[in-house]
Image (tube, rainbow, N blue to C red; front, side):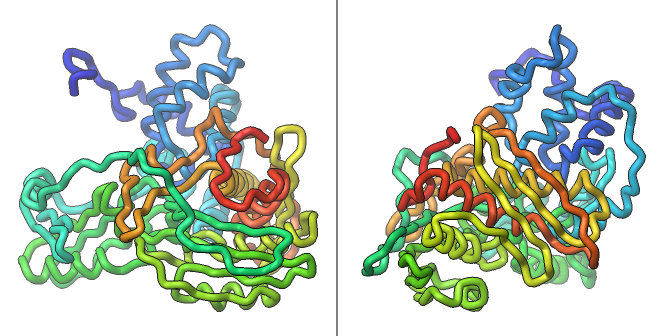
Length: 449
């Protein structure tokens, strides 16, 4: 508040309509907005930067400006491409087909269009009635209900989260064995930006958590919608149920940590935090690995998160072979990746393309997520299971300035459209880990390629 005292503030709705429309069109054309939660602030900042930039071909000022933001979906590159092509003619596209592709990649209903870049994709909390009560966690497994979010958080005794100075450590011990490669991973936050929210009218159906984007599999819990329905019926009024950023980090599912070793013939052992369904995933994708589920104190984990377990098993298999291979899915999608000359190169095929821009955008986003998974992302959880990294800056998501160029070739294929970005994540994570020499503990803290 001290920083903005005495200053005027412009939000995306305060921009000149023609300026906002130009940026919205450019981001839609480049695939620079997926869920659309982060892009309103990015549009405002880039619009202001454009007004005072003499040479818009230089990316240094753009990368510096984007350090004030976090975009989890796009991997930054398509946002920079929107900057480069701001005044290009708007391409003709079938946005209904583009929305179908986005829904397939995000595994949740999603809309594609210029309005999404301006924050109008229809998030879970956007359309709650103005007279709705607000419910927040009380810290004891229940809910505090009040007229406003300020009153509810004050009654709940909410404390602002911090980024810890403690070091994140992989929580599982390696299995004993004569291994050619080992891998231990830390707790990893999916880092979706729209915090969890739902609302419901008495006797109604609660708003879904995944209103415009699937949160990479991180919002498949039904706790908030169920609470919204129960509280609305109890109070006889609409109720908004909200998690803060700290709540999403504490209670939201994480990628299950692993510790595994592999022999030269591809056999081995992998220990993984006990997670519903993950043993079945590993049995399917890595039949040569013996899977041992381990109880570990910490936040909840989920096999629904992007390629959870699958990617780690594929990385160990890559280390045993000493080379990458094409990654395929049961649906018939495939992806391959290589790291060369400071770049990540990807080829992906996912059935009928429907919309090249969207598939390419999701592939770049998945490659960026894999890059962060290998190099920089983790949250600190102490031995008692308490999460200490509770701010958006704590997760280690690579910034625009940290992200290497990502080249994507979309390969047209017959058959129905299927998800391709999960295969891209696995292929890029495997290629990056091999390129780095298969460091035993992740994240490796090696951002440079």
